[in-house]
Picture 1 (cartoon, helix red, strand yellow):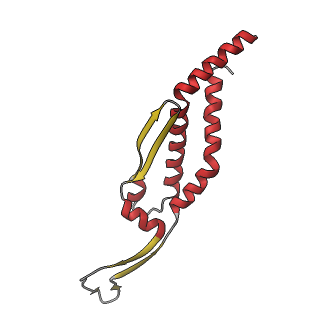
Picture 2 (cartoon, helix red, strand yellow):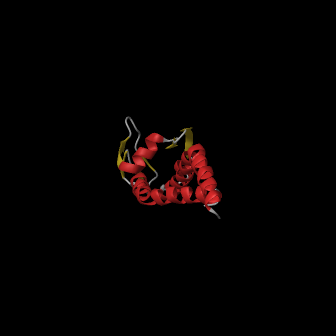
Picture 3 (cartoon, rainbow, N blue to C red):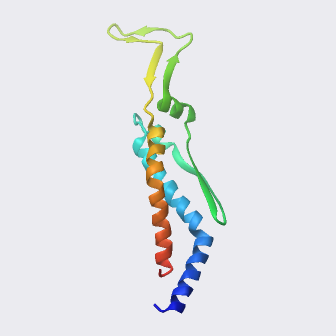
Length: 140
């Protein structure tokens, strides 16, 4: 590649970065974050994990963002931080062997915190890989 070809490739790369880098990077990061979140989500029935999704994607020029959330926010919060559930006006039932109580204590699993901690370490490399791919696509 001679100097003029290199300059042309740099111009194409700069235009490509300006046009799509933010979208490309956020898309890669959002997908990886959601994948890791689903890996970390506690699973009993799978409903909590199945309710996690990329809800929106916004971009404009050199910035972009994705919103990732769960569609069961109260339960997600309870699984994250734990807590107490007490049933008001409940009937206490027994089957002759087991006692079904009116109070439940749940330890928090901190699955979201673990995912965010993972992201703080992993997402910069994902961003770098996206930029590297854009540069390679431009012939650099």
